[in-house]
Image (cartoon, rainbow, N blue to C red):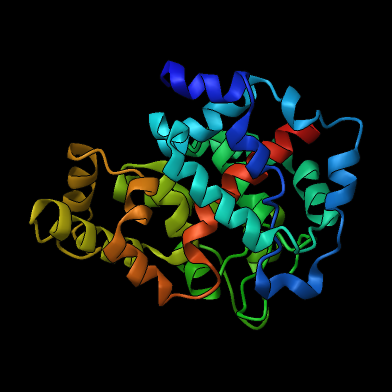
Length: 276
């Protein structure tokens, strides 16, 4: 993190003044959501934005953007996300669920090698307000796992038994999937977006980016080593990827503001640290 990035946090908290409202209820979980953003913002355990400690904010943002966190383009993207979600209601039940299982998430995140801020941020954004919340698409549990994904991660999902309903197994599977995506792409921002958009879409976005910027034709997600090598060699972050014009055209065809997902995870991870 360079001095410019730190300045943004210590002399005006410009970036995270925009992040605070970004605590979104996924569209598919609206029926489970209970508004409580007002409770979070006014709670005495949460510091005002201007008092957020650098030690809390910088590590979270650095996981996703590195030194890019101080750029105007990153701030602009976050502002757009705030404009998109600021009128939506948040739900406190999800915060209660994650607080209840925070120790399990912490232990399993350590076991799987997933940064705790990523683990908490994804869980808090995904969760529908209960341990067994189910979306209209069929995603279920704390980490909102789809049936096929859960089965691929070793959980039993059938008419008689659905291990996604067991918090410890749901958490373990969700963190396994996050770790697998990191191993595929070599970057936590990309891994987090893959959790939402799917690894296939991340691979497609990388192919668009590589062709435009370096004239390289990347393989699909089946050759994850080539993708990871490209990401590491060319220092591709999630912000660089999602800021590319060609990638923007691609993500525009996807639903539910998918390109905003990594930014919202930063926000939820920040809010959780404030609340705790």
